Image (cartoon, rainbow, N blue to C red):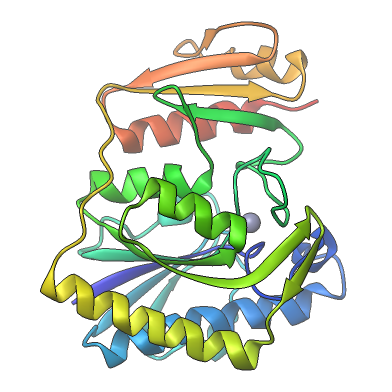
Length: 273
Ligand SMILES: [Zn+2]
């Protein structure tokens, strides 16, 4: 049995500030190690429950945060950018379920550490088939299109709440409680690691007994993106497949979720101030 561990950094315990997830800042070196350790805790729980192969997708920034020299020996690491499926790269490699580690809530969520959707400098809102969505819903939808349920998510209380709304039956581990967008009460890693390991093992055992329902996404998929300013939407709308809705909003439609995901990322990568 093979599983995907998709990892981000803003939802790792201790992280409350952009400096801590920015590779040019000295503090970052501490938090990339904590990110690696939370991924390893999930991997250890999965292996304990019978998983024999793990593919890890490094999903933060340029996707080169996880310390491979400290990574669990059963894991293989997808690192670097761009990769076709970005935060869930490896979802098509024969995996049967996914974990989301270190995730954060969508842009606009209240009391949520570093909440954003793809880019805090460009994107103010994203809708999937008319419903406001963040990276949790978008990545879970891509996983579902490959037949994968998301079994476990770790992050702050807002990310856990958002996961429960998008993915019924998901196991969540709250590693911190946000007091604002850049403040939280955080559990120490000596506490989060066993919590994550046990939750991962429990999630895999439950999945064996009763496979989780898949997130349902109606086809064709419609994605609407609202940018922070109209100049960003001007650039995204250079792609012929993108329709302009209003000053800051563009929309696209695709036959399947992976195509919608790639198109939305392309539109955002064109946008700048
Ligand atoms: Zn991130």
